[in-house]
Length: 92
Image (cartoon, rainbow, N blue to C red; front, side, top):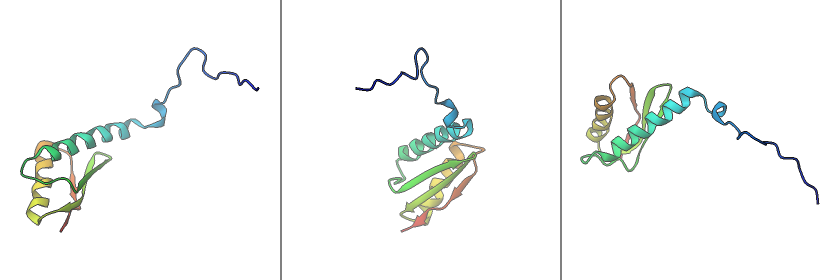
C-alpha cells in the first residue's frame, strides 16, 4: 500500500481566488432578480431566465405576449433602479 503525504496539515484550502469579486456580486444580483420575477403574481416567469454580467441584466427565454415581456423588463427596472436591463425575451 502506498500512503501519500497530506497536503493541508493545519489550514483549510482557500477557494476565494477562484471566483473574481465582480462575478460573485453579479451572481447574487442574478439570484435576487430571478426570485423577484418568480414572485410576481401577474407574470409567468417559468420560461424566463436572467443572466447578470458586469452589472447588466439580460432577460432571455419566452414570454406569452409582448406585453408580458415588456412588463417583466419594466418590473426589473422599477425594483432594481440603476441596473440596465436588456430584454431578449421571445414571444411565443
